[in-house]
Length: 504
Image (tube, rainbow, N blue to C red; front, side, top):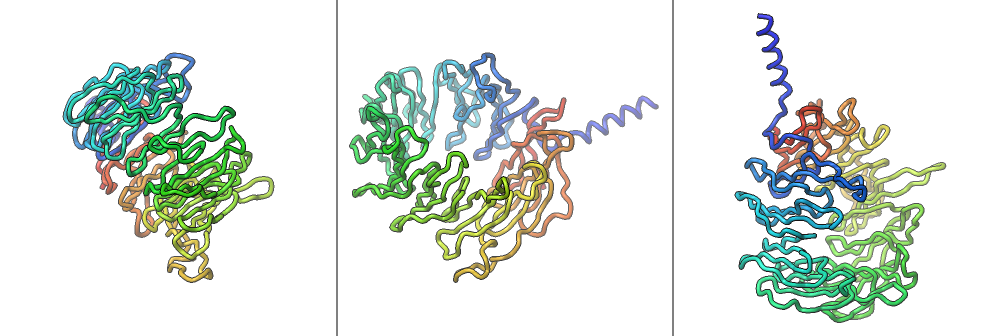
């Protein structure tokens, strides 16, 4: 009887400890990724042999689960560095397996949602899916192509980088500098001889309309290169980027001080005319989705901060704020981190500005360690105790920090304090529709593990937060747009594994 009682107690404990959800694989998982209902992760990754491999790079087995189907291994020896795996628009996965770090190449495999892995190439250094689901890859001195018409290769000496045109009909292929930096254009469907575009190129990119821009030969003493558009020089620059509508180009010039980390930023209209100066001594710069050119000008390398400057079409450049450390944009709304000087130190403040409104920039909060903006609602971590692993999660509207006494057009939410949601938060994941939050709370006694809970993003703060699983890996996230499914990896000793759980 005592033995039966002990056995029953053991079984009850085992049932209580069972992780919720469907188990996808056993082992220690890393690099959880979700795309279009597919889940991918590295299992039992470890540092490969060889002192030349950086300590932060790992290699392991790549597992993939599509929808409600079982997880399966699609590659071994897959590096943890970016670009090793990617999904096509139809859900097919490609992976560089058996990665050889010294050679910088591996085996290219693909796996359809309902098929076994298929070997595509024995040696490949990179690959890319087109918008139409065609596949291109870089093999030794060859461009590989797999389209609806079949697979073939095109010989290109010293091929190093590739890129698809937006319509998926052409591939730009650039040879290494040792092979002359030649840039070719290849018709993906018809094949044939690669069409030479330029020589001595260092970088290239397609515009939204399919125009191909590239940086050509450098001058003898360094600095700006020739900027070629469809093979014709239109300006000189060290770096460039198309605007979202493709009608303009942003140009970074270092001609005044070749080799410097900062330069002068210009806007260049493709229809003609000279480049228009936006700002000087620029470090970080990018186009916003709305077509504004944003940058950090007069950048101080020691302080790692500059002046947030905005250039809108048809308007002179506008300086928004000094001592800005970083920024992100959502439409014409910008969120940025400001270094606020204190006695002997400084604190970080989160500010926001709406370029389409008359209201001035406004402060949101101090000590912010992460945020997510959905529509008009902003969720963020702040008021941390001893670091970013124990913070409060708060909710506010983007305009809540606007002073009520500012100019006309002040929104009704101006001056409303943020809503406290949960304490002791290490991280969070917001569902795509903005309705639910996956909380990651530090697990007591563990330096990296977190406990997971799901709360509603809107409405009053929860009275009590109860984790549905403990000791999970911090990369756990929602696996669907509505926040009803979570993929997580357990890191508890003897219980490692990846699970897909439906959460109420």
